[in-house]
Length: 156
Image 1 (cartoon, rainbow, N blue to C red):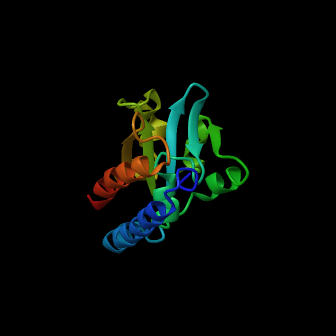
Image 2: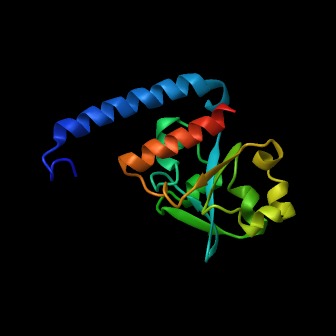
């Protein structure tokens, strides 16, 4: 996009700054993120959805930027797809050490169920909340905002 508007230099500058910021975050959060898995979930009209890499909602930050892993089943099922829908009963197969719960200002109904409450990440208070009304995408402004939100929650 930068080439289209003749802003290549500005884009390169942003990318370098972004990479330095993520590297600093990784160092500060290393004890919390190294070797850990994370899934990004959202309630949609089709049910519970988990997102693969590079599909907004913080995925670029946690997977590429912080080096966290996708849970094995989620990784396998999103290898050739950007998302997977699942039943409440199979939710445990797609989650790991952490969960990002993408929502629009409210917690989805499935968070009131035993299936949710019995997840490892929920039991260990490792659910990060991300309001997608203004941080859904993966443009630079959205990424910077998502990073700040996720970093603060991971830091706690």
